[in-house]
Length: 437
Image (cartoon, rainbow, N blue to C red):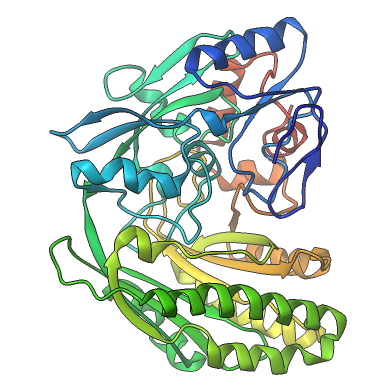
């Protein structure tokens, strides 16, 4: 995605920049040299992972540090089931690193292309009322400060900083090491099938509470929900994975080729959207299988889109979702992408969307060639009225004045940034908007 002297674009094509310099550090020392060099040239510096954020959080007009080569395993603490990995390591490569030790990440999102540093810095999460986001799994980190020095944060060094550094928005320094609390490897029994939306909503609280990992998708203009329920089982449990042909058909034919065609047709002829969505409900997500957790959590996403997601107190998910449905009907829009609803446990990360409260997430999407502005901004007003906090890596319009009211530790985080980066070496336009100058 980055080439020396070229233009960088994120995956969703919602942000781009032509950096003054692009560097590809392979070592921690190389990151330190890059930061010192950037400071000497009076240039701001930003690290980039996989570019899967839809906001401008990783945009780097000055020096762009592409961490694609800063990958791999640093250390394994077998006794405490903790692993330290280099910050550019992609999530889909982590299972191979953990397998020799019989370990797995406790929870993952539905995309695993991100780097570990990007995933935790933006608050990436999966679903499951008893499980936090990926940043909640972080027990330690090492970052390069604006002075080019290494700052170690763990339970014995600078422990008070962990809730800030584990979800730092890229504003406190360049992450180079991340330590994760892992769990013994496990499998998931996945049940995915369409159900009447009214039935899902009527039993939502119970299903979320009784399930390890529950979520649902709703295709606008239909009365059906696509439910996904994953149950955790020991690693020794019998596995019944999808057949290679079945997986190829679901992921490539239905999830990619047919969905791409449907989005293109819907964009050209919006009146077809309700019919296309009703057809999608019939051909998507009716399957049951058991496989390693990492093979179940994440799915392939090859159709490009843009996304906005808000975290709400769990008790507000149902009324906010109902208001969203009414909005789509009232405005007469034709929305081809589904609405996604997920859940997560409360955590203590200062800038986490789930800070201090059990949360439900409502995400809306639009095909990348469609303008999402009107839809997203109208949905955003609903989410704000129900106490919503925007996902840091997904599109929203909020600034520091509004966000300060929604995060109890906001001022503490800004004060830490003032201490670690007084000259705003790691600043960009997005961070200036959401954190202030």
